[in-house]
Amino acid sequence: MRYIEPHGHMVSRTTDDYQDMATAGCQVVCEPAFWAGFDRGSAAGFHDYFRQLTDQEPKRAARYGISHYTWICLNPKESEDTQLAEEVLKIIPEFLDKPTVLGVGEIGLNKNSRNEILVLEKHVDLAAKHNQLVLVHTPHLEDKLKGTRLILDIIKNERRLTPNRVIIDHVEEHTIKMVLDKGFWAGMTLYPESKCTSARAIDMIEVFGGERLWMNSACDWGHSVPLAVPRTALEMRKRGYTADVIDKMIYRNPVAFMSQSPKFKLPIDPL
Amino acid sequence: MSRQQLSDLYFMEARSKVIDIAAFLDRMDRGTGAEDFRVISLRESMKILQSDRPDRAAEVLRSLSDTTTKPIPSATTKAACGAWLGPQKKAAAKQPARAAKK
Image (cartoon, rainbow over all chains, first blue to last red; front, side, top):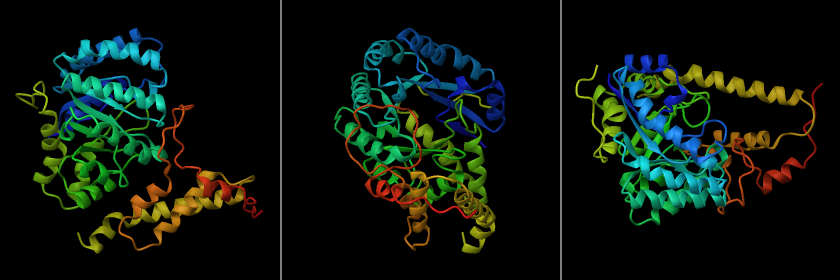
Protein backbone atom coordinates (compact mmCIF):
# COMPACT_ATOMS: atom_id res chain seq x y z
CA MET A 1 0.00 0.00 0.00
CA ARG A 2 1.13 3.54 -0.77
CA TYR A 3 -0.45 6.65 0.63
CA ILE A 4 -0.09 10.38 1.11
CA GLU A 5 -0.79 12.19 4.36
CA PRO A 6 -2.10 15.48 2.96
CA HIS A 7 -2.56 17.21 6.32
CA GLY A 8 -0.26 16.40 9.24
CA HIS A 9 1.23 18.77 11.82
CA MET A 10 4.48 16.89 12.02
CA VAL A 11 6.41 19.44 14.09
CA SER A 12 4.19 18.23 16.95
CA ARG A 13 4.93 14.55 16.35
CA THR A 14 7.85 12.32 17.28
CA THR A 15 10.21 10.58 14.90
CA ASP A 16 8.50 7.33 15.93
CA ASP A 17 5.43 8.63 14.10
CA TYR A 18 7.49 9.23 10.95
CA GLN A 19 8.81 5.69 11.23
CA ASP A 20 5.31 4.21 11.66
CA MET A 21 3.97 6.25 8.74
CA ALA A 22 6.85 5.23 6.47
CA THR A 23 6.34 1.60 7.47
CA ALA A 24 2.64 1.88 6.59
CA GLY A 25 3.47 3.19 3.10
CA CYS A 26 3.47 6.96 3.48
CA GLN A 27 5.43 8.60 0.66
CA VAL A 28 4.55 12.26 1.14
CA VAL A 29 3.36 14.35 4.06
CA CYS A 30 1.97 17.88 3.72
CA GLU A 31 1.99 20.20 6.71
CA PRO A 32 -0.22 23.29 6.90
CA ALA A 33 0.80 26.04 9.30
CA PHE A 34 -1.04 25.64 12.57
CA TRP A 35 -1.71 27.10 16.00
CA ALA A 36 0.89 25.98 18.54
CA GLY A 37 -1.61 25.47 21.36
CA PHE A 38 -0.76 28.93 22.67
CA ASP A 39 -0.70 32.32 20.97
CA ARG A 40 2.66 33.35 19.55
CA GLY A 41 3.68 36.77 20.79
CA SER A 42 5.39 38.27 17.75
CA ALA A 43 5.90 38.07 14.00
CA ALA A 44 9.42 36.85 14.77
CA GLY A 45 7.87 33.80 16.45
CA PHE A 46 5.99 33.04 13.23
CA HIS A 47 9.13 33.61 11.17
CA ASP A 48 10.93 30.95 13.19
CA TYR A 49 7.98 28.58 12.80
CA PHE A 50 7.90 29.10 9.01
CA ARG A 51 11.65 28.37 8.92
CA GLN A 52 11.01 25.17 10.85
CA LEU A 53 8.33 24.17 8.32
CA THR A 54 10.42 24.98 5.25
CA ASP A 55 13.96 24.09 6.37
CA GLN A 56 13.97 21.71 9.30
CA GLU A 57 10.92 19.47 8.86
CA PRO A 58 11.71 18.34 5.28
CA LYS A 59 15.10 17.12 6.54
CA ARG A 60 13.53 15.23 9.43
CA ALA A 61 10.96 13.56 7.12
CA ALA A 62 13.65 12.68 4.56
CA ARG A 63 15.41 10.49 7.13
CA TYR A 64 12.41 8.16 6.82
CA GLY A 65 12.16 8.37 3.04
CA ILE A 66 9.15 10.70 3.21
CA SER A 67 8.87 13.88 1.11
CA HIS A 68 7.64 16.85 3.14
CA TYR A 69 5.66 19.79 1.73
CA THR A 70 4.07 22.67 3.59
CA TRP A 71 1.53 25.50 3.52
CA ILE A 72 2.14 28.92 5.09
CA CYS A 73 -0.26 31.25 6.89
CA LEU A 74 -1.39 32.64 10.20
CA ASN A 75 -3.92 30.17 11.57
CA PRO A 76 -7.47 31.48 12.16
CA LYS A 77 -7.13 30.72 15.87
CA GLU A 78 -4.65 33.62 16.01
CA SER A 79 -6.61 36.02 13.81
CA GLU A 80 -8.26 38.03 16.57
CA ASP A 81 -5.14 40.18 17.00
CA THR A 82 -5.30 41.98 13.67
CA GLN A 83 -2.17 44.04 14.29
CA LEU A 84 -0.06 40.92 14.73
CA ALA A 85 -1.85 39.34 11.77
CA GLU A 86 -0.83 42.29 9.57
CA GLU A 87 2.80 41.86 10.60
CA VAL A 88 2.71 38.13 9.87
CA LEU A 89 1.00 38.64 6.51
CA LYS A 90 3.96 40.84 5.51
CA ILE A 91 6.51 38.04 6.07
CA ILE A 92 4.51 35.27 4.35
CA PRO A 93 5.53 36.18 0.74
CA GLU A 94 9.18 35.56 1.68
CA PHE A 95 8.28 31.91 2.19
CA LEU A 96 5.90 31.32 -0.72
CA ASP A 97 8.80 30.87 -3.14
CA LYS A 98 10.49 28.18 -1.02
CA PRO A 99 10.74 24.88 -2.91
CA THR A 100 8.48 22.88 -0.58
CA VAL A 101 5.71 25.46 -0.07
CA LEU A 102 2.56 24.40 -1.96
CA GLY A 103 0.38 27.35 -1.06
CA VAL A 104 -1.42 29.36 1.58
CA GLY A 105 -2.97 27.39 4.43
CA GLU A 106 -4.58 26.39 6.62
CA ILE A 107 -6.49 29.64 6.50
CA GLY A 108 -10.17 29.88 7.38
CA LEU A 109 -12.32 30.59 10.39
CA ASN A 110 -12.45 29.32 13.96
CA LYS A 111 -15.21 31.13 15.89
CA ASN A 112 -16.61 33.03 12.88
CA SER A 113 -15.70 36.47 14.22
CA ARG A 114 -15.40 39.72 12.29
CA ASN A 115 -11.63 39.87 12.75
CA GLU A 116 -11.21 36.27 11.62
CA ILE A 117 -13.12 37.17 8.44
CA LEU A 118 -10.94 40.24 7.91
CA VAL A 119 -7.76 38.17 8.17
CA LEU A 120 -9.20 35.40 5.99
CA GLU A 121 -9.96 37.94 3.26
CA LYS A 122 -6.38 39.22 3.42
CA HIS A 123 -5.01 35.67 3.11
CA VAL A 124 -7.31 35.00 0.16
CA ASP A 125 -6.09 38.18 -1.51
CA LEU A 126 -2.47 37.16 -0.85
CA ALA A 127 -3.06 33.71 -2.36
CA ALA A 128 -4.69 35.24 -5.43
CA LYS A 129 -1.91 37.79 -5.92
CA HIS A 130 0.75 35.07 -5.75
CA ASN A 131 -1.29 32.46 -7.69
CA GLN A 132 -1.13 29.97 -4.83
CA LEU A 133 -3.11 26.83 -4.02
CA VAL A 134 -5.27 27.29 -0.92
CA LEU A 135 -5.98 24.93 1.97
CA VAL A 136 -8.89 26.00 4.18
CA HIS A 137 -9.65 25.02 7.76
CA THR A 138 -13.36 24.96 8.63
CA PRO A 139 -14.43 25.58 12.24
CA HIS A 140 -15.06 22.95 14.88
CA LEU A 141 -18.29 21.34 16.04
CA GLU A 142 -21.23 23.76 16.38
CA ASP A 143 -19.36 26.49 14.47
CA LYS A 144 -18.65 24.41 11.36
CA LEU A 145 -21.92 24.83 9.44
CA LYS A 146 -22.03 28.61 9.75
CA GLY A 147 -18.28 28.96 9.22
CA THR A 148 -18.26 26.82 6.10
CA ARG A 149 -21.03 28.93 4.57
CA LEU A 150 -19.16 32.16 5.37
CA ILE A 151 -15.89 30.78 3.98
CA LEU A 152 -17.46 29.57 0.73
CA ASP A 153 -19.07 32.96 0.18
CA ILE A 154 -15.76 34.78 0.73
CA ILE A 155 -13.75 32.53 -1.57
CA LYS A 156 -16.38 32.39 -4.29
CA ASN A 157 -16.34 36.19 -4.33
CA GLU A 158 -12.59 36.15 -5.10
CA ARG A 159 -12.72 35.76 -8.87
CA ARG A 160 -8.95 35.32 -9.20
CA LEU A 161 -9.16 31.95 -7.39
CA THR A 162 -10.66 28.97 -9.16
CA PRO A 163 -12.46 26.46 -6.91
CA ASN A 164 -10.50 23.45 -8.16
CA ARG A 165 -7.33 25.05 -6.69
CA VAL A 166 -8.90 25.33 -3.23
CA ILE A 167 -9.44 22.48 -0.75
CA ILE A 168 -11.98 22.98 2.02
CA ASP A 169 -10.86 20.73 4.83
CA HIS A 170 -12.59 19.02 7.78
CA VAL A 171 -15.90 18.55 5.96
CA GLU A 172 -18.57 16.41 7.60
CA GLU A 173 -21.92 15.08 6.46
CA HIS A 174 -23.66 18.46 6.82
CA THR A 175 -21.06 20.47 4.89
CA ILE A 176 -19.57 18.18 2.24
CA LYS A 177 -22.33 18.67 -0.34
CA MET A 178 -22.16 22.48 -0.39
CA VAL A 179 -18.36 22.30 -0.81
CA LEU A 180 -18.40 19.81 -3.70
CA ASP A 181 -21.41 21.46 -5.37
CA LYS A 182 -19.46 24.73 -5.61
CA GLY A 183 -16.55 23.01 -7.36
CA PHE A 184 -14.06 22.93 -4.47
CA TRP A 185 -12.04 19.97 -3.30
CA ALA A 186 -13.05 18.58 0.09
CA GLY A 187 -10.91 17.05 2.84
CA MET A 188 -12.21 14.61 5.44
CA THR A 189 -10.31 14.60 8.71
CA LEU A 190 -10.19 11.32 10.59
CA TYR A 191 -10.31 12.03 14.31
CA PRO A 192 -11.12 9.72 17.21
CA GLU A 193 -13.94 11.93 18.58
CA SER A 194 -14.58 15.14 16.66
CA LYS A 195 -14.67 15.57 12.86
CA CYS A 196 -15.21 12.10 11.36
CA THR A 197 -14.42 8.45 11.90
CA SER A 198 -13.13 6.05 9.26
CA ALA A 199 -16.59 4.49 8.87
CA ARG A 200 -18.25 7.87 8.33
CA ALA A 201 -15.58 8.94 5.84
CA ILE A 202 -16.25 5.81 3.80
CA ASP A 203 -19.99 6.50 4.04
CA MET A 204 -19.38 9.94 2.54
CA ILE A 205 -17.37 8.41 -0.30
CA GLU A 206 -20.30 6.09 -0.99
CA VAL A 207 -22.89 8.88 -0.92
CA PHE A 208 -20.98 11.68 -2.66
CA GLY A 209 -18.50 9.73 -4.83
CA GLY A 210 -14.73 9.76 -4.72
CA GLU A 211 -14.01 12.80 -6.90
CA ARG A 212 -12.29 15.93 -5.51
CA LEU A 213 -12.05 14.27 -2.11
CA TRP A 214 -9.16 13.28 0.15
CA MET A 215 -8.69 11.94 3.66
CA ASN A 216 -6.18 13.10 6.26
CA SER A 217 -5.28 12.51 9.89
CA ALA A 218 -4.56 16.17 10.73
CA CYS A 219 -2.35 14.69 13.44
CA ASP A 220 -1.07 17.39 15.79
CA TRP A 221 -0.30 17.91 19.47
CA GLY A 222 -3.87 16.94 20.45
CA HIS A 223 -5.90 13.74 20.41
CA SER A 224 -5.22 12.44 16.90
CA VAL A 225 -3.91 9.35 15.11
CA PRO A 226 -1.01 9.68 12.62
CA LEU A 227 -1.95 6.34 11.02
CA ALA A 228 -5.62 7.26 10.54
CA VAL A 229 -5.34 7.25 6.72
CA PRO A 230 -3.89 3.71 6.33
CA ARG A 231 -6.32 2.47 8.99
CA THR A 232 -9.18 3.87 6.94
CA ALA A 233 -7.73 2.12 3.90
CA LEU A 234 -7.91 -1.12 5.88
CA GLU A 235 -11.53 -0.38 6.76
CA MET A 236 -12.30 0.31 3.09
CA ARG A 237 -10.90 -3.13 2.33
CA LYS A 238 -13.24 -4.66 4.94
CA ARG A 239 -16.11 -2.84 3.20
CA GLY A 240 -15.20 -4.58 -0.05
CA TYR A 241 -13.40 -1.80 -1.92
CA THR A 242 -10.79 -2.81 -4.49
CA ALA A 243 -7.14 -1.86 -4.13
CA ASP A 244 -7.57 0.49 -7.10
CA VAL A 245 -10.36 2.51 -5.46
CA ILE A 246 -8.43 2.69 -2.18
CA ASP A 247 -5.32 3.85 -4.03
CA LYS A 248 -7.34 6.60 -5.70
CA MET A 249 -8.63 7.89 -2.37
CA ILE A 250 -5.39 7.78 -0.39
CA TYR A 251 -2.84 8.44 -3.13
CA ARG A 252 -4.01 9.51 -6.58
CA ASN A 253 -6.55 12.09 -5.40
CA PRO A 254 -4.10 14.04 -3.19
CA VAL A 255 -1.53 13.79 -5.98
CA ALA A 256 -4.06 15.24 -8.46
CA PHE A 257 -4.77 18.25 -6.24
CA MET A 258 -1.22 19.00 -5.15
CA SER A 259 0.26 18.47 -8.61
CA GLN A 260 -1.43 21.74 -9.54
CA SER A 261 1.60 23.25 -7.87
CA PRO A 262 4.66 22.82 -10.12
CA LYS A 263 6.74 22.33 -6.98
CA PHE A 264 5.00 19.09 -6.05
CA LYS A 265 6.98 16.03 -7.12
CA LEU A 266 6.46 12.42 -6.16
CA PRO A 267 9.47 10.56 -4.73
CA ILE A 268 11.56 9.09 -7.56
CA ASP A 269 12.34 5.82 -5.78
CA PRO A 270 9.88 5.39 -2.90
CA LEU A 271 10.26 2.63 -0.34
CA MET B 1 -22.59 -4.52 0.91
CA SER B 2 -25.66 -6.36 2.16
CA ARG B 3 -27.36 -5.31 5.40
CA GLN B 4 -26.22 -8.62 6.86
CA GLN B 5 -22.59 -7.86 6.01
CA LEU B 6 -22.87 -4.30 7.37
CA SER B 7 -24.41 -5.65 10.57
CA ASP B 8 -21.59 -8.16 10.92
CA LEU B 9 -19.08 -5.34 10.52
CA TYR B 10 -20.65 -2.56 12.59
CA PHE B 11 -23.40 -3.93 14.89
CA MET B 12 -21.24 -4.48 17.98
CA GLU B 13 -19.72 -1.00 17.65
CA ALA B 14 -23.16 0.61 17.32
CA ARG B 15 -24.51 -1.47 20.22
CA SER B 16 -21.64 -0.30 22.40
CA LYS B 17 -22.23 3.36 21.50
CA VAL B 18 -25.98 3.16 22.25
CA ILE B 19 -25.29 1.64 25.67
CA ASP B 20 -22.67 4.33 26.34
CA ILE B 21 -25.23 7.04 25.56
CA ALA B 22 -27.83 5.33 27.77
CA ALA B 23 -25.32 5.14 30.61
CA PHE B 24 -24.38 8.80 30.06
CA LEU B 25 -28.05 9.85 30.37
CA ASP B 26 -28.46 7.70 33.52
CA ARG B 27 -25.36 9.41 34.93
CA MET B 28 -26.83 12.82 34.15
CA ASP B 29 -30.06 11.85 35.92
CA ARG B 30 -28.10 10.94 39.03
CA GLY B 31 -26.36 14.31 38.91
CA THR B 32 -27.60 17.46 40.58
CA GLY B 33 -28.41 20.96 39.34
CA ALA B 34 -29.81 22.31 36.11
CA GLU B 35 -29.47 20.43 32.86
CA ASP B 36 -26.59 21.63 30.69
CA PHE B 37 -27.70 23.08 27.35
CA ARG B 38 -25.41 20.65 25.56
CA VAL B 39 -27.36 17.73 27.00
CA ILE B 40 -30.63 19.38 26.06
CA SER B 41 -29.28 19.62 22.50
CA LEU B 42 -28.18 16.01 22.59
CA ARG B 43 -31.62 14.83 23.73
CA GLU B 44 -33.19 16.80 20.85
CA SER B 45 -30.77 15.35 18.32
CA MET B 46 -31.54 11.81 19.44
CA LYS B 47 -35.11 12.19 18.17
CA ILE B 48 -33.62 12.26 14.66
CA LEU B 49 -32.25 8.75 15.12
CA GLN B 50 -35.78 7.30 15.11
CA SER B 51 -36.72 8.95 11.81
CA ASP B 52 -36.43 7.12 8.51
CA ARG B 53 -34.74 9.98 6.63
CA PRO B 54 -31.61 8.97 4.67
CA ASP B 55 -29.35 11.71 6.11
CA ARG B 56 -29.61 11.23 9.87
CA ALA B 57 -25.92 11.94 10.46
CA ALA B 58 -26.11 15.27 8.62
CA GLU B 59 -29.33 16.22 10.41
CA VAL B 60 -27.87 15.42 13.84
CA LEU B 61 -24.89 17.63 12.99
CA ARG B 62 -27.22 20.41 11.83
CA SER B 63 -29.27 20.12 15.03
CA LEU B 64 -26.10 20.72 17.08
CA SER B 65 -24.99 23.67 14.92
CA ASP B 66 -25.15 27.44 15.22
CA THR B 67 -27.88 28.37 12.75
CA THR B 68 -27.18 32.11 12.65
CA THR B 69 -25.59 33.65 9.59
CA LYS B 70 -23.80 36.81 10.79
CA PRO B 71 -20.23 36.90 12.14
CA ILE B 72 -19.90 37.33 15.91
CA PRO B 73 -18.36 40.65 17.06
CA SER B 74 -15.21 39.01 18.45
CA ALA B 75 -13.93 35.61 19.49
CA THR B 76 -13.75 35.39 23.27
CA THR B 77 -12.56 31.78 23.28
CA LYS B 78 -10.82 29.46 20.82
CA ALA B 79 -12.75 26.33 21.77
CA ALA B 80 -16.06 24.95 20.53
CA CYS B 81 -18.38 23.11 22.92
CA GLY B 82 -20.28 20.79 20.58
CA ALA B 83 -23.76 22.30 20.81
CA TRP B 84 -25.39 25.64 20.23
CA LEU B 85 -27.59 27.49 22.67
CA GLY B 86 -30.24 28.87 20.34
CA PRO B 87 -33.49 30.56 21.44
CA GLN B 88 -35.46 27.29 21.69
CA LYS B 89 -32.79 25.62 23.77
CA LYS B 90 -32.53 28.71 25.98
CA ALA B 91 -36.23 28.36 26.71
CA ALA B 92 -35.87 24.66 27.40
CA ALA B 93 -32.92 25.31 29.71
CA LYS B 94 -35.14 27.58 31.83
CA GLN B 95 -37.46 24.65 32.60
CA PRO B 96 -37.03 23.02 36.06
CA ALA B 97 -34.11 20.62 36.24
CA ARG B 98 -34.87 16.96 35.63
CA ALA B 99 -35.57 15.34 38.97
CA ALA B 100 -32.76 13.26 40.36
CA LYS B 101 -33.85 9.69 41.01
CA LYS B 102 -32.15 9.33 44.34
